[in-house]
Amino acid sequence: MKNNRLLIAMTTSMLCATLLSACGGNKVRDDAQSLQIFCVDAGYRTQWVSDIKDLFVQEDWVKQKYPNLNVRIDTSKDQTYGRTRMDAGRSSNTIDLFFDMGLTNYNGSDDLLDLTETVYNSSVPGEDTLFKNKIDASYLEAFTFDGQSDPAKKGHQFFAPWAGGMTGILYNADIFSSLNYTVPNTTDELVALCADYQGRGTETSPKYCFIQGNDETYFNYLFDIFWTQYQAREGYLDFVNGIADNVVSKDIFKQQGRMEALLVYESLVKNEKHFVNPNSINQGFAVAQAMFLKGEALFNVNGDWFVSETKDIKGKITNPASIKMMKTPIISAIKNVVPDSSIGDDAELSALVKAIDSHDTSLSGAGYEVTQADYDYVKAARAITYSIGAGHHAAIPSYATAKGLAADFIRYLATDKAIEAYIKATDGASMPFAYDLETKNPALFAKIDPIHQSRVQYFADTFIDPYTLPNKYMFPLIKYGGVDTFKLANGYDFFVQMGKKNGAKTPQQYWDETISYWTDDKWQDACERAGI
Image 1 (cartoon, rainbow, N blue to C red):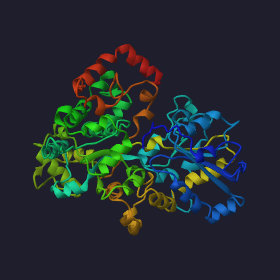
Image 2 (cartoon, rainbow, N blue to C red; image 1 turned 90 degrees about the horizontal axis):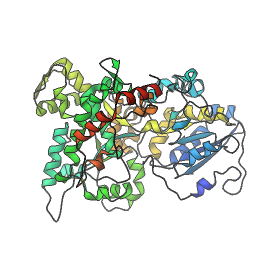
Image 3 (cartoon, rainbow, N blue to C red; image 1 turned 135 degrees about the horizontal axis):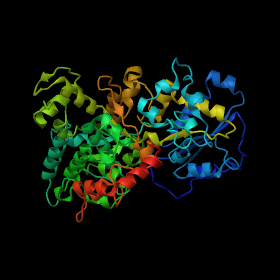
Image 4 (cartoon, rainbow, N blue to C red; image 1 turned 30 degrees about the vertical axis):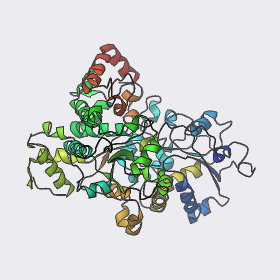
């Protein structure tokens, strides 16, 4: 699901999306009852939108409201196509509804329809709830406009989600079973497991723990999770808002959680450890995923699009590996920052995590004895997830001829019917709407891929109360001020920069670079551009 992966080949479906012609030479209908949809063909593919369309057109309320309904769906693998159509403007663009990944710069602009009343404050069709109340709270936050360019629009929504985008560590369940490995609860356990597995290899038959592609940055998604586990979600939000010790200050760059997360990265990808398959530097994401399915690594950092994206590849592999997604291990350094320092060592931290996963509220148990404050801190850390779903935009041009119809289609996405259709079409992926699949449709739950079964159970766990980090690039200081977690000369790619055979960057270098870069003048300028 590479966000910036560009395929230059123009597909037939894209050619059918031109203004004057459709497949078969039919002219595009452009009226209030003719809905033209564009869906980018990436990791989740596009079958889901066709299946939801089929349900939508059969609804009695839709038939009554739109007696002359016509729906057309265009797709393209070119991830610049949607933006190109929007850039063409009202004189050329006939698309009424985009399911895209490249429209961020249009947020809050007059070119997009304000969805606040038409979607978010409207009811989910056939259900007694508002759209905004069914969407995951962190996605609602991510899609709420900051008002930087137009204060009158602050708090409004111009995008809606069409993908969950949860990321995490996938693991080879077959290897785990054969070696009697257990899923690590802490990062120290993860490193120890990697060392054990790598040590089982030989010079002629090495064992690699991780394999990734050189054209994706999925591994970097773990960084914000480890950082926020240590710093707590309040610390993460303080950083993206420029707050340190309750005041706006460049001292945000002294947050220790950022360093601790880098130290974890170094312990996993440092070249001398040989945990990472060296082909990761030379091959693309598709090859890496195929090798992972063939059993050539223990882990692959990826997202909930993995199953649908690799469906064709998996079908060509003899005895593909059984892959599952684990809960991201808790950063072991958290024991140094919990309020009461009652966690003695990593074994005790692991025991506490195990108890939390079992919904045990006891402050003492097998292998642990902690205070309530420390229990609560680790429990909150266990809830942290990272998603790229905020970059998947459902959007309607303000000049669309069928904007009312398009808004109704977006509202329909949040219905239980549409949610289930999406799950079926993507082999288990889901949109960020409240829906407990295992409870509401156990038969469908049993059919979805094991990767998604564990993910669905996690998100339905009200005891853990999962929290998806809001995309930091939606905050003014990051978006307009140019602030980021670190100031890097070679991009935000820890996996590549820290894993080099020669000239690898150290955590201290990342830290020192950033501190040196952010002078008082640069910080002041960033704050002014962000309106702080």
